[in-house]
Length: 233
DNA sequence: AAGTGACTCAACCGCGATTGT
DNA sequence: GACAATCGCGGTTGAGTCACT
Image (cartoon, rainbow, N blue to C red; front, top):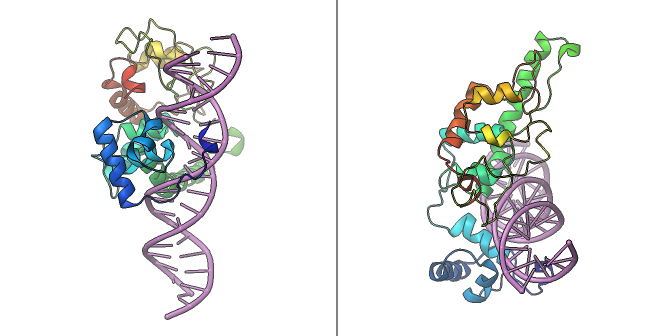
């Protein structure tokens, strides 16, 4: 946390010259080692600012402009599955950055989803008496740890189920091994974890893991063979 | 044309996790 | 194990732009 102490570091919008310097530096030395970038590039910026500028703006293949219908649809479904894991969501939207996704969500999608939820709530209010409404908030699946150490056997392509992985506080006791069967057939998962990992609906059924999420989860997990596919670039 | 409120998005901040010594 | 340095993430801010009056 030394960055805050740096004095005289330029802030605010980036100039074209600064962009050029940063681009040249990354092309020359590659991505990473961000603490060296300001010095190497001759930029009076902190490493955080450099990293952010590269990742959100200068990096090749970044898609700009409006989100397509399919992208928004995927975003909504991934958000339902992952919560505010913007980097993970962005990872599934080619050319989009986590900042883009977050901004788009906060300005466009959130409103739509909220009004949609309000509509649904109104419908529920019409159909069900307040005392009978026992739904609980959705619990989001939180893949953890966010990153793995280089020493981790999973990183080297070994079995995912044979290694110990921490479980976030968001996952209830009783499903510590949710990750062990994550890639198995989801029916098995749900049966095993019925009362712990997933929210319970009015009649004891699952609200979260419906067919819609089944498809998106399959899509999300299908490409991954090891945990490193989820957590490491 | 001027004022102003809403909106967008690039950038900053704080913090937890990881890595190196 | 303790500590410092670094990385990466999500939340927040604020300048610029747009739409409306």
